[in-house]
Length: 435
Image (tube, rainbow, N blue to C red; front, side, top):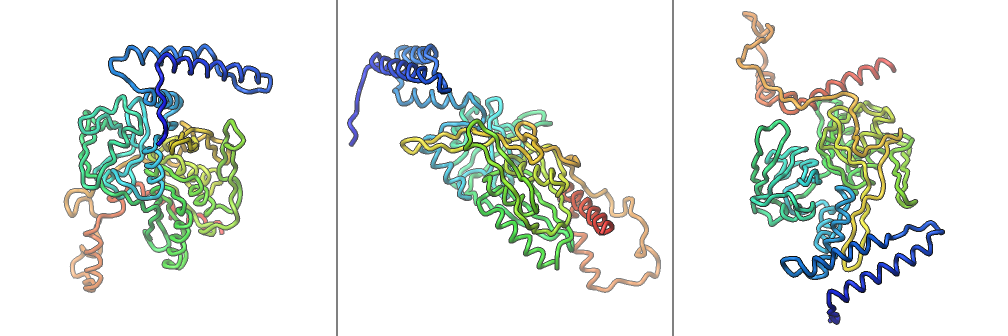
């Protein structure tokens, strides 16, 4: 058992001041060598505030709490993504990056003191309950979010499977706050899924970027190629994809590029500067691509969209992306704690900064919902079936058509995907005509 050292507030202040003096003078001596100088007067102010809290605050506060709060405040004042990770926070972060964790299934950040939804994760309680990218969460159950740190809010939203939490949300276009009750569940993130929309035209959805996302993507595309005897075109859906592992984004971009720069970073230190190049080999062999994005596409998603756009490898459709173009590095500290610190910015191959700008799509698409016109015959053109004494269809054809009529059309299910498919067909026609 470690021995406990107790000291008075005055002694602690003396130690802090002595440390400030020694650090300040020691660093000052190295000024000629280009090292930063710790300002002595500011450290004196910090010590003064620290002691006034110790002496006059309405309740007694222990030194460890005050120092941890000081560290948290120092990081929270930098940007929305830098933070101090306690033992629990650090452990939760490691669990979250494994692809399985408990909670609601949303990627969040902070904006104006509220929790902002970057994107709901596919097939999770949050997405099924109707949470949208851009929603501002102002209350968790009856607890106001204002004043919470991001980590504190995340800890409230997490909980045992089967328990409920009510989110009070402000949504653009809504006249009043919306209350949504969500039942927590174990979140198992399936990174890649795919389907064949029509013969020769494939659809691949990436919900987030994990360490094996690029490998899974290539496997899905190869499977579709075998099933369809080759592919004429592909739609890559990155809508509401909050990002994830950088190497996953680089690998996905590389899968469709033959050569060239994918992304680079710039930071203050040399170890924060990277350049990622594509290797030969395009899994689609040059077939046309359309990339779908929206305001919930962030970070790694923006890297992929930006790289494919700059190399003119794909047409980007949708709405402007979130604009998270900063790199966070996890710096472990003592006692299993860590810093999550912003250390660099992302840039597309053409040198565009993603940070606070996002990726502007080549073709803008509004979020619309198409519904069928009222009445079975409303504005329906005359066909052979309307003519008297027309030949009857075979039974098998009738059943197939009835099945198609019962299922909602692609335009009704996902209008943006429907428009992307139409564009993709046009691109394949142009490619075939150009040889």
